[in-house]
Length: 114
Image (cartoon, helix red, strand yellow):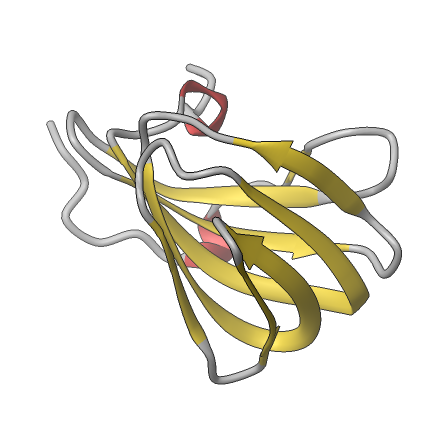
């Protein structure tokens, strides 16, 4: 049975890598995933692309983001959209937290069965 409401306090953090970055999957469905992500100052990922549309709403912190040929700084209160198959990269300036959605859902966000 699908969950129509999930409390973030009921979801466990998943460590993304050894740098301490982590996320909580709030929803994982056929066409959409939504997560809360925390990334540490200094973390960065180089240019990459994927077939997923992504968007993020920054709750705290800041990151330099390049999408295609446009570079900007995203801060708390900003919404960011990344179209599918467009090269993008991120450099985190300070500890950052954001809510992100991906369509179709990225497999990495799929919760493990308990």
